[in-house]
Length: 141
Image (cartoon, rainbow, N blue to C red; front, side):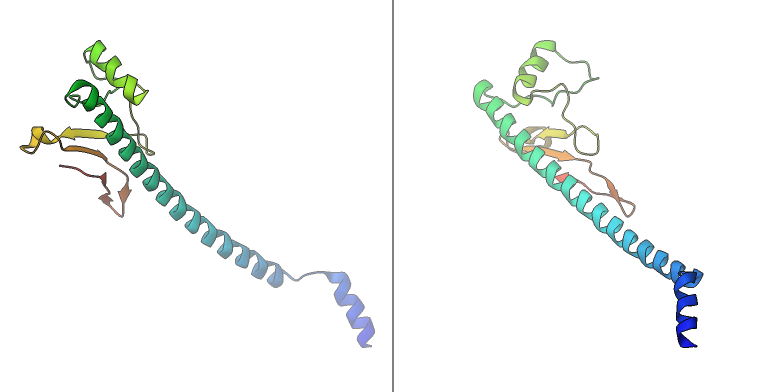
C-alpha cells in the first residue's frame, strides 16, 4: 500500500504551498541582492566623484603653473564666457563641462574668493540626497 501512495505522490508534483515557499525564498534573496548592489553602486559613484575631484584639482594646478593664476570658474556648457578663456581651460579639462556621476556639474571656488590664500582651491560635487540630506562630496568653502 505504501508503494501505491508513493507513486501517486510522485505523479502529483509539488503542492501550492511548496511552490509559494520557494517563491518567497527567491523573492527574499532577490531583495537582499538588490539592496547590496544599490549600496555598491552608491559607493562606486562616491569613489568616482572623489577621483574626479582630485583629477580636477591636479589639472587646475597645471593651469595655475602655466598661467600664474587659477581660472575664474570651471567651464560650463550653458554659461556665457570668454571663448578664449573657455578654450584654454578646456585644454586642461578636455571637456565643455565637468559632470559628476549624478549628472551635475562640479563646483569650484578659489580661496581668495573667500578671504583665504590664493593658493587654496575647493572642488566639490553636490552629490546625491541621502535620507533627506544632501551629501556633499569633496571640500566646500
